[in-house]
Image 1 (cartoon, rainbow, N blue to C red):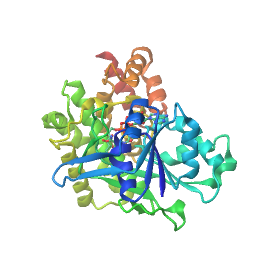
Image 2 (cartoon, rainbow, N blue to C red):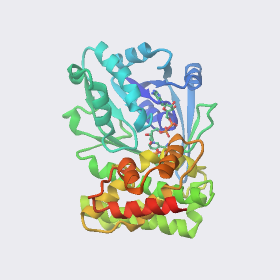
Image 3 (cartoon, helix red, strand yellow):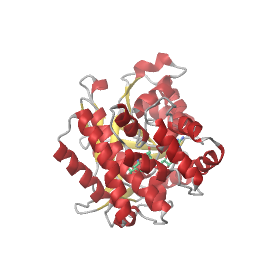
Image 4 (cartoon, rainbow, N blue to C red):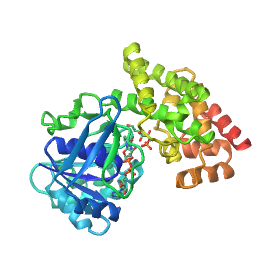
Amino acid sequence: MRAVHFGAGNIGRGFVGLILHRAGYEVAFVDVNAELIAMLQAADAYQVREVGPEARVHTVTGFTGIDSKADPDAAARAVAEADVVTCAVGPSAMRFIAPVIRAGLALRSGDPVTVMACENAIGASDTLREHVLEDAPELAGRAVFANTAVDRIIPPQDPHGLDVVVEDFFEWSIDRRPFAGSEPSIPDAHFVDDLAPFIERKLFTVNTGHATTAYAGWMRGIPTIAEALEHPEIRHAVEAALADTSRLLVARFGFDAAQHGAYVERALARFENPALPDTCERIGRQPLRKLSRHERFVEPAAQLLERGEPADALVAAIGTALRFDAPGDEEAVELQRLLAELEPAALVAQVMGIEADHPLAPQLVAAVAEAQAR
Ligand SMILES: NC(=O)c1ccc[n+]([C@@H]2O[C@H](COP(=O)([O-])OP(=O)(O)OC[C@H]3O[C@@H](n4cnc5c(N)ncnc54)[C@H](O)[C@@H]3O)[C@@H](O)[C@H]2O)c1
Ligand SMILES: O=P(O)(O)OC[C@@H](O)[C@@H](O)[C@H](O)[C@H](O)CO
């Protein structure tokens, strides 16, 4: 069985590539990073080293690398011959891989290929599908797009090597419905009838809690997530933000409150893993994406206000996120420029997608005004 995975970075090598290898796939990693592809082409194996109480070491073999910038035709041919295509390039980069997948589908004959976007976003495979089929609706029958939720914390890695250090926890949930009974065989993944509870629980717990920790840590000059959570005020802010999202998730999906509480506790324990050198800078990366309408802060806060419930801790976390000014992060630089130039209501509409008539608008406008006054 053949798989093509776009994005040979942390999740690509330390999660998707590993799981597909364990499922018996030969994986062709496609990336635009020429140094990374050269290493993949030269190597026979790399290791995924888990850290945590149930740590194991895995060796991944049987892969190759394709540089889609230098040779997009080779990447398209690989898609044409694949059983499964996955990506973990970042939600905003999916539009750049879409033309390559489209070219691969155009070359394809036989059974439709399974396409799964493994990004932190609701409906990422649907978004990828829209990009791929934009100018080629006639190719729709050649691929089955299934949404997924991926969960494994993988901190920044040595950019000059292939080995990856990861936490011991992982979860890959895949929407079963698009397959109409013929799901691909991926034993480490689980197929579910309704992905919404899985992706929203993950994004609005792991990623909301992570981001709240990161922005509060960054504001205080604390480098790592584990260290930031040791700060009592940060811990309190994170627990309060997760109390907001927990109320929403329990009400929306009917989760058992105690079981959901255990899920939250486990997320916090994962953040605290002392062997995981994860940074506030990585977790805070791309703040414009994280502050956008359907992301980890604004979406749950908007849903709570629409239900007539408060979301004060989420709004406080948004206020802290506005102070993320990492100089090496293009979106952080752009966010600070927008803060300097736009009226609060205009920034809330442009960055967060919340218009003046939404019940959340007054609090967000006040948070932006406060950030501008600092
Ligand atoms: N790291 C984690 O803990 C984690 C966990 C779950 C989900 N995710 C999600 O996985 C995705 C990737 O995150 P990551 O941490 O692996 O990032 P990363 O930066 O380590 O890897 C992304 C890779 O994509 C490549 N890439 C970018 N544009 C490309 C293009 N046009 N074509 C081919 N390759 C391209 C980059 O060169 C890089 O190698 C994100 O959506 C992230 O939210 C990350
Ligand atoms: O990847 P992002 O930028 O959406 O979010 C940063 C982290 O919260 C994220 O990568 C987590 O480590 C991951 O989602 C855990 O599964």
